[in-house]
Structures are given as structure tokens and as C-alpha cells.
Image (cartoon, rainbow, N blue to C red; front, side, top):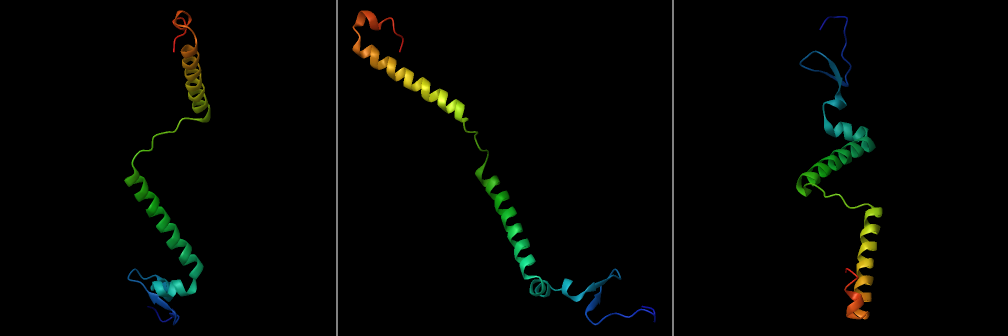
Length: 100
């Protein structure tokens, strides 16, 4: 260090020669100076790790049918039930013409 440079009391010199504030060298100092930011960062990291582990453990998700597809399947099911009910009521000579 040359005679023209002064290091403030609240700073440390890193091995690369950069001057870093003392709070950046100690995590407790960072948390005490920036509590909300520290909580948000830790929460974000935890959320990211949780989502990553959940997706790894959960495996692939099978896509659910859309509302239109579900409505079409339900209509087909109801139609088959109605045909079956009608075929049970009609005489056998007429019910052979209805495919259930």
C-alpha cells in the first residue's frame, strides 16, 4: 500500500487487493444491516430448491384433458347410458336396431 492510500477502519483488503466493506466479509453483519433483503434472498433460495426437488421427485406430469374434451367424454357417456336405457325398454325386435 502506498503512502497516499488510507484504508478506512470499516474495510478489509481482499487477497486480490480489492477493498471490501467489513459487512460483506461476515454474513451476520449482512443480516443485521439488511434483514428484509436477507430474509427474501433465503426465502427465494428455499423456494427454488423446493421446486427443483419437487419436480425431480414428482416425475413427469400427465396432461389433463381440457374442459371441451371432458365435456365431450361426458356427453358420450350420457348418450351411451340413454341408448342402453332405451334398448332395455324397447321390445327385442326394435332394440336390435339400436347399437349400445
